[in-house]
Image (cartoon, rainbow, N blue to C red):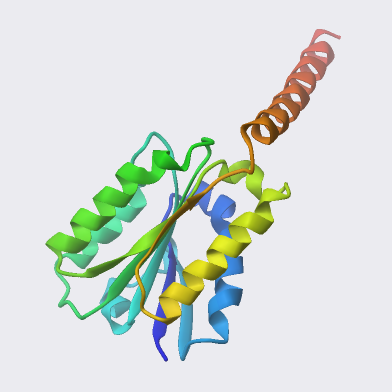
Length: 193
């Protein structure tokens, strides 16, 4: 059995978006490992990072890049003595296409290669802001269960998922924006009176 660290390494305001994914992954891994530790950027201690057999980075991206908070963690870890740690990632974005996470995954892979760590793969999730409020959450939950199985068995894992269809995504997005526009119009009317 392994010691696993779940590291919510995204920016502070995006950590709430990742909480449902983090909680679900925690449930899938909790009974199947010796030690499961959950950390956020604010509670992260780089001196203990390499005491874990496996580390899963969880972060939400924007603009096809990696969060600056994750880059800061990378920088802090570069001066630490290395161990045979396996690295996984759960990367989420708000765009429909999970391919928007590809650059972030490549940055993480390059960092692992440079630091001589074992990059074992990732789960990339598109339209993450809508997923947990739709039937697509079951599809994502199944992928997260597959990711947890790969982590427990020390296997490579490369997968991506998003909302079930473009039509569902567009319908949910339009519902959200129509609701926001109505709120804004209501607020403007109040200010006029």
